[in-house]
Length: 306
Ligand SMILES: [Mg+2]
Image 1: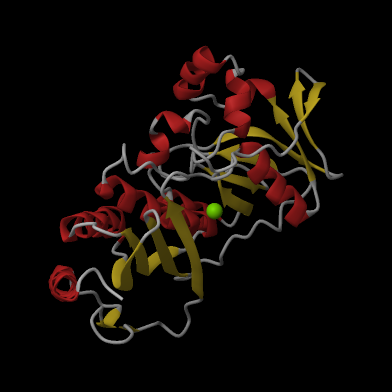
Image 2 (image 1 turned 90 degrees about the horizontal axis):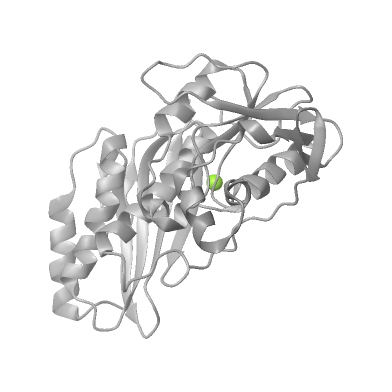
């Protein structure tokens, strides 16, 4: 399957010409499969993420370049959450019938915009057209490069809970433009102090519940410490929902949420994490105000719909 036969081959020629040399890539896109040189001591850390028109973006509003950037950045953010280095990626795109080659090129250039700063080579992909909406999928290959992957499963009672930036209201635009915290995630992994980590894709309440479930612990968040993004306040003026609830429940901030036995010392050039609470025993999450439990936090993540 392809765009049109002649169009597809033009596109493949163009894609081949876009590839930049990389130590990792022995054979890039163009053959049946790519061939990568993988250091024997490296763990391969692999994941996949897709974006759907009408769910994760709106093709009547967002440009193909923005859409390509977003799906790659979602994958890079998962690398950040595992403290691994992005190494390579493959992509598939299901294009609505009648899409132009220019449109497909812009999607690819969006992928590259996001991947290039991390030397993450795009080593293959598949393009097809169909009668449905635009779907774009990226599979990412990360490598451990000397740092053990950080999972969701090792938070301990007494650990601090931290986030790497203000939360809420990403739907006003940041869900398309966030920056994956790859270098920060890497430093956090290197610190040896981080016990669990996740990137906030579904929302603080839901992503924290993933850590609590996997680690079999509970959590208390301090109401006054949860950083609220200006977008959450703006959205609150429109919809009447308290900004704190936006910070707790909105998705796609893609800040890192992690637990640590003590506060990691990071390069001053990086964002400094904000402590928002403490891991407890039990299996519940509470919001605390001045030592009093204000409310039980239910995992109410974003339901992935624009
Ligand atoms: Mg994630």
